[in-house]
Image (cartoon, rainbow, N blue to C red; front, side, top):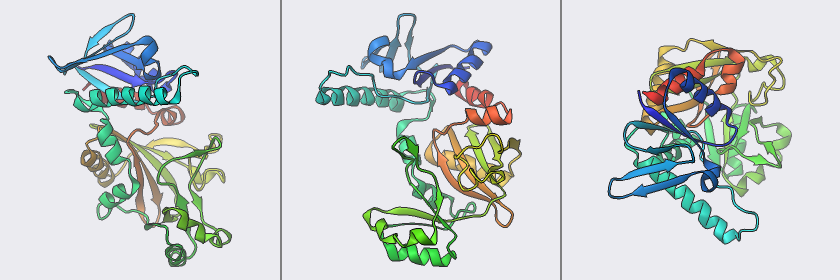
Length: 312
């Protein structure tokens, strides 16, 4: 059983849940609130032994191969408001490079290494890998308005628009949306930047898969039971949408495992649609996706699977 370094942020419920599991099991772990690096922690790398040392007022650890690392979420360091921007940029960049160096060079298991996360976090590459292995929606990425019009006609107006990278604008998350005939009148707007469009696959339900080295677990999301969540389950309607653990077919489990291995990941959250006509249709992989809300709504113990993956 390995010790675990948890790199996270203040008030992270996922880290809280895993830490409680470790406490019950007697696992040694060290939790770093990364935005408080300058205030609460000391970190040192020495070339003579190629080890990182991290300490706070209570503990010091030497990151040899007896430690695994959970790269849960590394945050930029808190900075004084009166610090010049040029200096803030240096503080942020140097802190980021230090964490990246630790995560990239560590001899133990890292869930997940930043270079693998970067490689995996691309919808186009994910779909290219999935093609021929599992069903995927017909997809285009283009800044050519005529291509969008042809795609719209090809699928008889049943297409949706989604961002390649999750974005918040004016404190609002941008969700997947169906493209209406009225919106298509403004199709020239896509010439501003490449946009991703997919055929809209009618669904019975949606599935978020939480995948680790040893477990591939599916939670079905009855998103079609609510007008709010029908197009995108992330428009949550917990009062009307049911979440439950389901047994996944072997081909879906095998695909999830192969996708993790392709990107060198030890954890990933994958989204699927289940359609009566087409079965399981793969949408995307999030190499650092959320999962605790699935545990809380379904009652299935995902914390155990995530935590055990960290100590093995």
